[in-house]
Image (cartoon, rainbow, N blue to C red; front, side):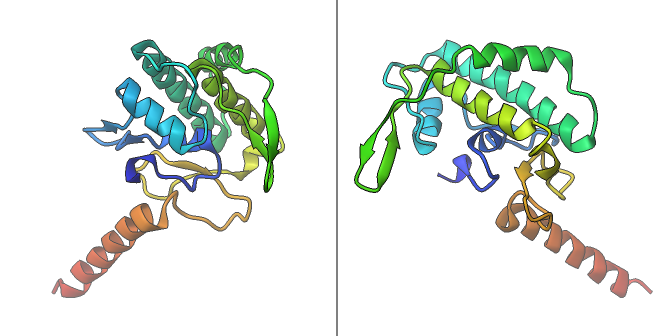
Length: 184
């Protein structure tokens, strides 16, 4: 699904991308219902075995915003906001040991029992990527109207999505260049 785009380097960063237009006057949240959250979790191999509730949606939205604040602070080299660190710590309480089983191609990770457990897995991944070792690989999208944050181990990426943000920036640059050359 386009609204569940991936390619940011980690599922927790893809969760941040479920708010489209975060820095624009009107934004769109792809995870507003239990069905949408279940679909996102399924697309990211974390669909829980139990029901997903409205409370789970609110919890994901709250933690998603805390994760965005933490990632943005990391990219800017600023201290991590204490309230967001506390929220991340609370989300980590849902983390459980992974259940694995043999699979024909190796190992398969078992589904989480609850949405809170899936959120705990995302929080664990975020802590890993926000740590000293990986935090320098976090980058903000080069499109200032996009709130995308992604992992860039190469240090060469400019946008969270070349197809979306990269094209939008190239079109803007082309139009600006054409406007400059057409002025008397």
